[in-house]
Length: 185
Length: 185
Image (cartoon, rainbow over all chains, first blue to last red; front, side, top):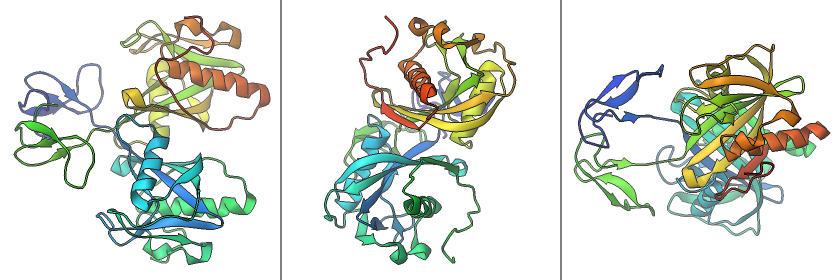
């Protein structure tokens, strides 16, 4: 950040009165420009015993498999955002969503919120963001070709929970370096 | 938003290529300035059968009672942020935190994350953000003097759950206008 989005003059870094952190503050109009973590909302889409994944056709991690998820937008709830992202990335319709995971990634200022949900029907397909969309059974999951640690973590929890049918809400931090849970890479 | 924080030139509103929403985009350097909901992390602090609340000494809602909570900062997890806010606002130390509520308020681009936690000892006190900090039993809670609907919602869930000792994680939207659950105002 170099300039004030309010008045266009130069910003400086300083600790505002009553605060204890360095912020970008406008030297002219004194607007404080806070910077905060962003929320990424997504779905863990299930059909019968299979999980729907999509292959990313955009950076970052183009060509790797992921759960449908994306940045939460102003004006929508985390559930609405998760369902929107799922529709945009997989062309699937999901029902019965339940909060499943809250995963913080403080080093990159991100917080993921995942909902478990069922595909209403096995209807899905590629989109502008996904070159392929496929259902995977447990032994077909491409552990070494997953896009992000958070995807591996969420899938790992789900597959363990499924053995007990107890799907409690998960809350974890993801710290780097990440040690893969199941993949060999 | 009037000016580009990167280059200082004027921003315009337009839908970027491949997007479907109006964004602020710099007319000169073409930086897209995304705006996203912000996370507020907080604690529901319990000591024996009482709940710790603080009276706000800052706007908005100065003079009204609230649960300790505040904007999540870059570099911290939602749990770290919740504990930091609790310490800053109540001078209390909490133990055994458990995720308890995820409450979306899409109309004001906010998402609250509350953790239940216990006070290690009944030690707490006012701060620069709280003029008073007090433990309340159920029949002492100032329902008509609570600062925000999300505080009422979280307390209401907790008091109901406590009767069953089943504290499942809650996920709800708060929409305006808000119809008070317990207060008369």
